[in-house]
Length: 173
Image 1 (cartoon, rainbow, N blue to C red):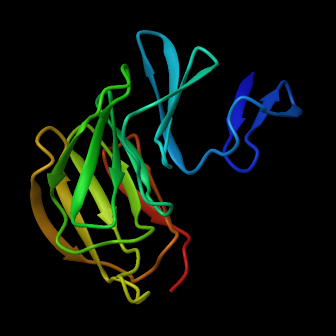
Image 2: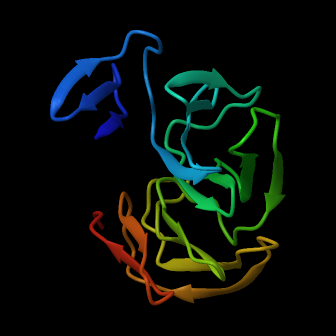
């Protein structure tokens, strides 16, 4: 078993033995996926970093420090400090694209995706106030389908469940 833990410095966890990585100074929050039987991690930051085949590469783009991410298909979707989402192909380090999809600016929202939907919930506004809504997007086009009320919290985690639903847990008001 091999895991990479984000932080300063990032840490490899090989069969329960932690070792600090020296090839990259910091890894912010990210998302992971498997493409063509290869584990790939994409991490927020300046610049965005990709880990594939145990090698770090950078994208020619950056995210804000409090960006959150989810995997949609073979792409990593990051929140930004705007209503845009940053969409990056996880199998290559190209510049990616942005799409205006959110109803409000969200810092530290929970984000997860199923085959049908992406849910981006809660977070805080620019003034640090909790947001009590969730944006539900189409997973193919990333077009916003609707915005629904939810419990206001930041720093929560979102998880796609096997039945197609998304659970949002934790966080703080």
